[in-house]
Length: 121
Length: 121
DNA sequence: GATTATACTGTGCGATACACATTAATGTCA
DNA sequence: TGACATTAATGTGTATCGCACAGTATAATC
Image 1 (spheres, rainbow over the protein chains, first blue to last red):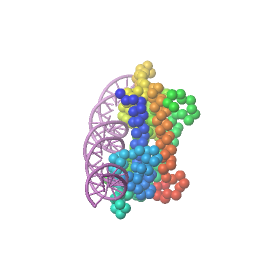
Image 2: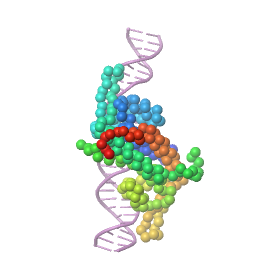
Image 3: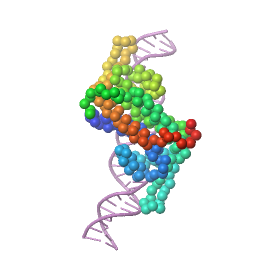
Image 4: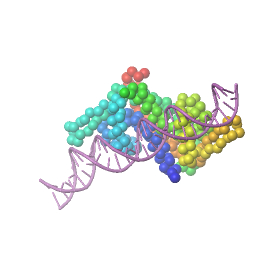
């Protein structure tokens, strides 16, 4: 039997899942390598497993949204990713979708004008 | 080979997917049956396949977030769902998470102060 | 009897999560 | 200095989970 905590965790994970790609794309206006992305997002409070990120980056590159390139000159070799042209276009468009969805959600979601007592606080 | 349109479609779908449960929960402060939910969301511009919704409702009930009850008195039998107490709590908490994520996204996402020329407009 | 309202089910696909493996640089301690 | 641990950095393989989609079923209504 799943505890309420576990259920919540699952839902929140689903939430993050949906926006993961958008988040990654939004970070790649400047070139960056996997490890740095993980750290960056960690600072923002979003933890991301490398085993999730690397395949994702490769997928996005395969889809033509990213370009990548090895840098072997600075000590340990790193693979830098950056938005391609298509990636920039997609980022723009998906961002628009996010904002639209966000608008709908704002209308639907409860709260704002307090009053729910559920002891969760 | 995937077209840019298809890729976008996939991403947008992922986006919706992540917030789907939250959306459903937010609609169930008042009791409602599956078919009516589909129609309601359709009006909001969110299309939702019944084959996606019904199993979802059952899952949420199984998790204890919803209560359901048949109504057989009004012509065709309908199964009404409504938030349980746990459901209300979870809705509140996940809503909070959504807003938090939204805040992070606002910081990360591009645009706002225009300047990107990518011909998507 | 056809169409609409309403619910249910089963299978496949796609994507993450997680655990594990790998290489290279750097630091440390005897 | 040489061995060893630690960190930087990337990569892979598998299980799991959840939706999408197509199809099924029933009751009411026209």
